Amino acid sequence: GGDDRGEGEEDDGDGGDDEKVRRFDDLMLFEWARERLVFSSAPGDGGEPADPDGDDGDDTTHDIDDRGDESDAAIDDMIRRATASVRSGSRIKPGTFVRASMTPAAGERSPFLLDEQEFHKCVVLILQDDESVTVGVILNLPSSQEADFFFGDVTTMSTSAGPTIPQRYGGRYGVKNRSSDPFVWLHNSDELRNARVGSPVDKDDVDRDPERVWMCSREDASAAVSAGLATPRDFVVVNGFSVWEKTPVGISATSDGEIVVVEEEELGDDDDDDDTEGGDDDDDDDDEEDGGIGDAAASLETAGGMRGEVWNGRFEVVPAAAVPAMWSMLTTQDVLTEDTLDTNVQRSNEAWEAEI
Image (tube, rainbow, N blue to C red; front, side, top):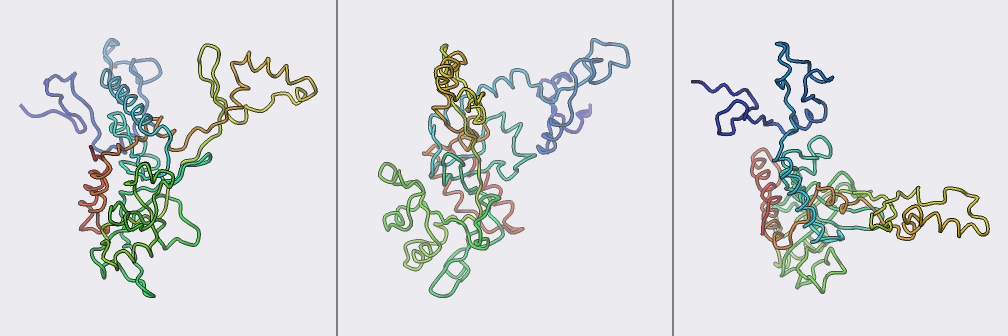
């Protein structure tokens, strides 16, 4: 009459032993197991040994990545979400909010638990996107350091002007000679925008969407607080930033419409002798036969960056309508202490999960 479920196992509700679902309470351990423990689902084929009782018909192993229809549904959902993200932000640009993917596949198999753990359930604001890199800041990881406001010739802690606000961990990269000074100050206040405190993160988008997040200096923020235009809670202060590099590629299409992607080193001539007089015609013929590789060189683009992360299902674009709720939750986070740890984690998750 007792519950014979082993640790890490749950009954799916049907009561059958064959329907037990094995789960890891520790997702980091689950990712480690997926990467390093490979089991064969058929006895005697080089994986697990055959059934010692001689019944080769029974599967004596458990594939921890075998979810059947659930896996297919997760993949379909991931494709749907990635497509929606690309449509809502086909070109990732400054001022765009992205977050670690919320798809079921990402929830069960997070890509950030073994590597780049800072991106697990993170919210990121894009500051820069060019042909080389995408630069952004993580917003929902408050640190134990308070943000300093500047009044006159004296630097004071924010407690003198109101509630304390945390410096946030924005990423592993810093600004040279500014390691002790927060990298960027952000606000999302109509009153501060109307007072022209700072400037839009996306400077090209101010006329089309004036309600995007703005960036300012510590002096701007301090002056606004001194003038009564804002409280410290109106600002999100980030120290450090994150970088996603890009790889130059050529994009082309064959006669049947197949897309060809060519790495940068493949775009040059294969044979230096082809540079002789009259060699251009041969090159053109070869390019046509090779499915438009020459055209690829003429349409050099970049792959990777945050756009590549979105396409790969690791990140997704936050819907614009969800930004107010997300931002509101971020501004309720406190300086990290033993007493505020649980609340900060809860609010971090709620900011990540913010919906329309």
